[in-house]
Every structure is written in C-alpha cells, then in structure tokens.
Image (cartoon, rainbow, N blue to C red; front, top):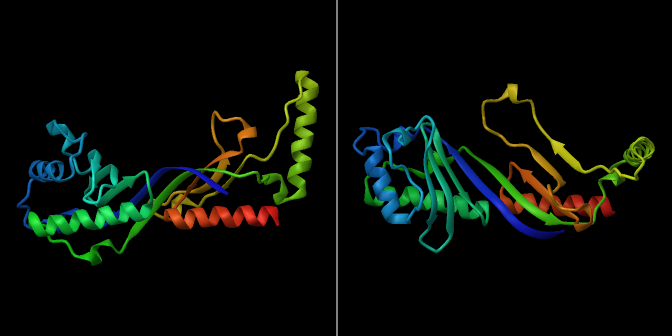
Length: 220
C-alpha cells in the first residue's frame, strides 16, 4: 500500500459552544477578528449573514503556530470542525491549541474535558494492486458474466470488476454525524493506475493501517 496523498483530515468536537463564553462577553465579530489576526486566515466572514452559528461560521486557509496548514475551521452551536490536509493528529493538535490559546488570551472558558466527544473523517488516495474480486470467488464469476453479456450486446469488450467496498450504518439509529468507510477506484483515473480513494470515520493513521491490513488479507 502506497500513500498517494492525504485528501482531507477532519476532526469534529461535539459540545455546546456557548460553554466557552457562558456570560456572552465575546461577540462573534470579536472572535473572528482574534482568530484572523492569530492564524492569518485568508477566508473568513465579512458580512453579517455569515455570522451564523447554526449554519456554521467558517474560516479558511490559515497557519498554525508550528507552520501546519489549516484547511478549514468551522464553528457551530454544538461544536467545532477542524480540517487539515496532513493528518487528524494535526487537526486534533490545532483544535486543542486554538482553544487553549483562546482561554489564555481572550478569556474563553475552555477545559480539555469539553473535547471528550470527537469524531473523525479521513480521506486518502492510495496505490495498491489488490483485487476486490479476491474477496469471494462469486464476485469474479459475476464480473465475468456481466463482462460477457455487455460485450455481446455492445459489440466491444468492457471488462468489469468489483471496484468498491463500502461499510455503512443505519443513520436512523443515531444523531451523531458518523461517516462511512469505503475504498473505491478513484474517479477519472484509469484502472491500470491502481489508484483508490478511501474514506473512514477514523484518525488518519488508523485509517492507513486498516487499508494496509486489508491489502495484506486480500493478498494472503
């Protein structure tokens, strides 16, 4: 398994944002000014309609203290989203560092225990020569049947194969925003390039280890 790129690494912490400012002493406008001055965001709310915690107040393309690029920070009534293009470890570090900075400098009432409930979304592109048809012999047989029938009707040979694995959950059983796990052929890339897109509701390193274990199992 070869990592091609980290496409997105997101952490979302679920808690009541009002707990950071229980007496409502810091307006969204002031908070925005502090965040832009500290982290140099290039995209930030400029109009009154953009200061809406229900829809999310969004900050784009900043820089953390150690030089890590911040892709996006979004503030909601019920939590904070942080995205990077490097790893969820970096996203966690930025989330915690930003809140600690806010407590030290502008009076936010931040406590680490506020971040007990977190979720992750990791998106990566990887290269591997595994075949999903090897999951079960029936998949190869089905792919061959479809290939044969389409070749007969269309007059050209179009080889089919199992191209994706998706694990989902019953969204009606939870209100927690959990993502799916999937690995699939990457869009607009020839199959011969052996490039896959994968998403998982896991920290980046766990996600990559899961893919490595899957590759080993399919080859084994």
